[in-house]
Length: 87
Image (cartoon, rainbow, N blue to C red):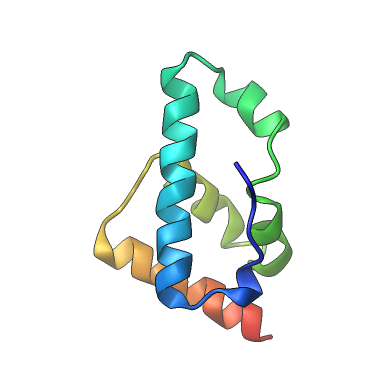
């Protein structure tokens, strides 16, 4: 999966990108890839790690890995990402 620059996306694009990442991870895990191996060999979280606060990053990763798509959680993640990018 090609990573995207977070600073160039609006809120809707960010939301769609989060869903793309979730679907990409789900596809790889459905093919039988081990989650630890996947995480060790991917760079899809790198841009998020650069901008998200240390206390938010693990929650973000777990939410993405578990394909959580509730409006509340997604909007909270988008709020944090947007706030972090503006800093």
